[in-house]
Length: 323
Image (tube, rainbow, N blue to C red; front, side, top):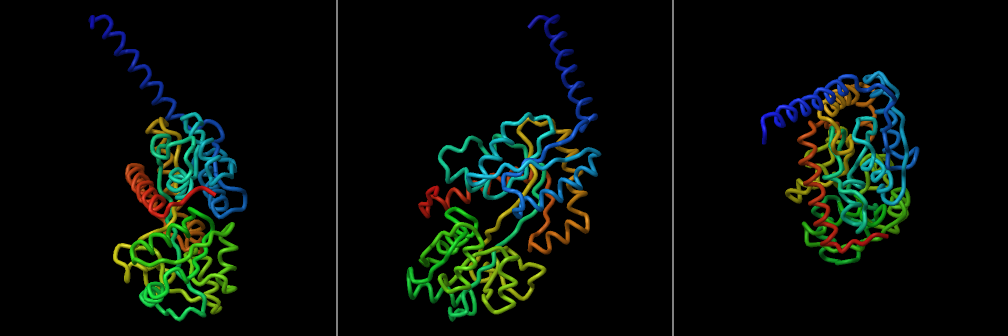
């Protein structure tokens, strides 16, 4: 390449880098949109609104929540994936939208790894394995014995095919060699009612949902799906204490469209760490039975890849199809 051409190319690239740096330094200069792929008043929406308010305080601009629910959280996720990579569109992604729906629905219009740049994994939340009081099992081990003695007899409702409650049950069965009858319901509320009424015998439901019914005796809690015991339930063993390596939960994190400048991602990462360190957010997480993570972007990338791989294997093994 001629020296003159190289000279001008060098300064052209330097100019682009300088402009990008100045742009990032001035960020944000206008309101920021936070896309939430769930309907208003959902659990993710409530968390997102708390994050939006406090993130706006840290960034010095308004952060506006944009609810785009529907189709297993794929509609809002596609909107976020196709938005400009300028830091003015943020996205709250989770286990369903980023690691379950893409491996169940054959024509999802986004790639969870290729089309997004993770900022920080915010929380992880887990399921409680609980049974109807009529089930004689007092522990995870006893439930396994009962399930093996009566293959397909125990009814295990879920919040829907491919939901975290469904996949948690599928992982349990694959790791124990048991077979239970899966019955999908239209949402977590109906799933819980089914087990409390005795239509179902066991379920994997969010800890925050199961605990109140456990206290009243309507359900019996046998274990939690986290790798370590949950601080708010130290008396409830983990499923992993019986089934070595069992670990299944949901998660929520902050992401931006792929190609967003690294300086902006770092700015957002620092801001979200301040948000999740506030007493208000800690109280919220504790009430939901969630663990606050606050990961680095690079760690979140690897975590996301592993979650997609794990759920793809579960979906394939169970033969799960979109409803």
